[in-house]
Image: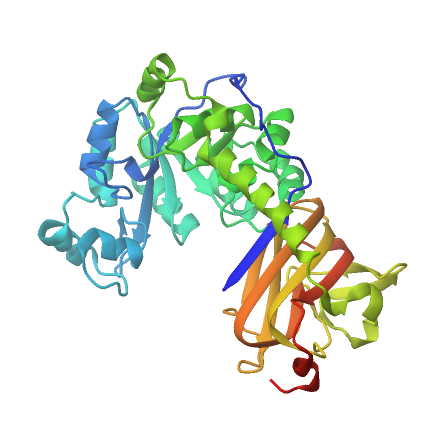
Amino acid sequence: MIYTCLIPKIPLLFSALCCVQLFAQPGDKLPRIAHAGGQVEGATYTNSLEALNKNFAAGFRAFEIDFSWTSDRQLVCLHDWQESFQRSFDLPPGPPLSLGEFEQLVTDHSQFTKCTLASFMDWFANHPDTLLITDFKEGNLDALSLLSADYPQFRQRVIPQIYQPVEYQPVRDLGFERVIWTLYEYPGGTRAVLEVAPAMELWAVTMNTDRAQQQLPRELNAIGLRTYVHTVNEYADLLYLQSLEVGEIYTDSLSTVRERELQATTTLTAADSPLLKARQERSRESERQIEDFFQLSDVLYSLSANLDPAEFTTNQLTIQALPAGTLELIASGKDPYFNFPPLEDPDQDINILIDLDVPDNSVLEVFYTTRSKPGFAAEQRVSRPVEAGNNRLAIGLNEDSPVTRLRLDPGTIPGVYTIRQFEVRTKSRPWFRFLRWD
């Protein structure tokens, strides 16, 4: 069992929020986007003609569609050949099928008429007031090249999503004037996005709800860049995100028509947002866990008492010891880490306190070994988001075998990290444990 907590560098956000000032972007208003064609009969991710027709009737005019390559290099409207394939056809996942095999499966095994590129484009041609937002799961540039070559008449209505900045210019060179940079595959944090985005003439920047709550929409808005957040279906979440200056959303079901109905009939506010409430609860739990940590009396390791940089092994890191048991870490790559010396008195139930400054929003990871599993491995790790600036985390490990070693990956961003406190504690143990009678 693993539990963890994180005290954010800001107090509980909007704890007394009772009203929202709607955010308006300059210029044309961003359209709401139906995610994967939108929900139909309670089902999501169908990328189907039924979803397109149902959500067009509900008022949507912008549709995000997932595309995957077949084995004969054709494009079909499918999120992936694994979980999505299994969910769509109730068949075991496997390698990509041919276009003909996919079409036969749609006929024989699918509740909905999942599109191919050709059938989607037929629908697209018959609905001239719609926009396509592409989500090619692999081979993005190859897919957009095919789309541009085979359907040049639709370039003005197709808005490609790019996943890395290096894709921007090739996509513009294919004739697509409006481009969305979606961040779900981009490893950089808020500062990296703010440095890179202004060099591109983007139609919008899309992010998940975690990034949206790290002030990125507000900072992008300040430099004139519009934003989307995915995937948002709750009205109160929409209000909360609008208060963070999010421009628009990808959604399965929350059309603008439905939004207007709720505005007229509900008393919900941003303070009712499940996203906001979850963030507040994480903060409260963090405070409780930090308090609990300091109730533990048995210190297994403390950076302030045991600091000896010569005992650390590192990767892509230069370590400098600072006064009072503080470490400054200079990361030169995207996979920096260092190993702590073995714990002298291992225990299977340990608690770790980390006080860390990071250069940008990133992900911290703690890897660990046990007596029964002595090698570092992905299944023995804790991963937690950290925000630019100071972070205080309490991480608990409860294993069947004593934890023997720890490895800290402070983040995935090159730059300067400062560890102000690193301490490992456990519950006070019976006297015979110290004699190794366990």
